[in-house]
Length: 402
Ligand code: GLY
Image (cartoon, rainbow, N blue to C red; front, side, top):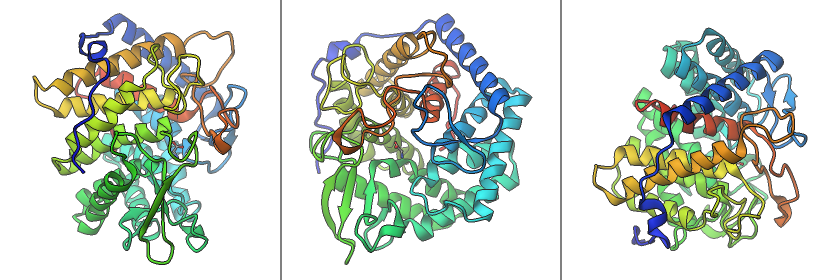
């Protein structure tokens, strides 16, 4: 498909240079790090469960959790990266060690969120400290992802391989854009071309089948279990099959630049522009995303995580685009606007004693109802990408772990 056609509906909103003062970012970062340290001292190296913190409090499993667990561990690696503080490193190491056990015991290794779990923990640990044990854990996770959660026939990362026969597992989804980086990384690290090719093919399949002509995305895509041939797009967490679930879209805004950083494939630049401009055309006036892009009114239920993930993705692509390129300035301004509004309206005092670094995160809008689960709460993935956005703004040579 010809990409790069989506235009901004209100270009002036994003072409005006927008900066956040150094004082504001420093204060926000300092508050976030203090809160993270308090969280670590209170709860220790445990595993938050996905979408269950209904009362603005984390709920933890003693041993293994869902995809949030990777994001929780990743927060400590981000904090260590930014401060060099021993406490943050020890927390990162302890969570990474739990992921080592998970690998050893083959617990939950068929999860479709393997990349979310192992990139911000084991890969981050290896990149930041050179720890060989962490490298081994990350490579083992990549091997699992390739062997059990990749369809060679259909060329996509599978959601839930166990239910393949029933057809529900013969699917991919936008979330898998953040699983592909584990394969890219492992391919580069080991020279195993199968890993790299699987990641390249998965990204191409996503472009072909999940990104629509208007730059929006299907959350899920169903393949035929008989032969893995393409069938149709649908949703799990969005408002309808034809709507655009905002966090799903943000995995594209974030994931295509990561793929570009590994491959340099030209088609990813106009593709990323389309998904980013669609996002910006649906950004409510207060710059905090709604849970689904069917809704653009400021009063709609929010998912602040979708906006902050998109901001990180736009920062990432902006860094790789040449000076003078129109989209580069748009991405920098838009990302700063989203981060600024997130600091103002999703952090700080909200009259509730909440865990986590930011609120208004919506987890799982099942059964077409935004009320269904975890609405405008806190979640480790919101915390992780908020901290990453601050790191990107604060530290210009910051390198993400994906
Ligand atoms: N599994 C990632 C998400 O729910 O966004």
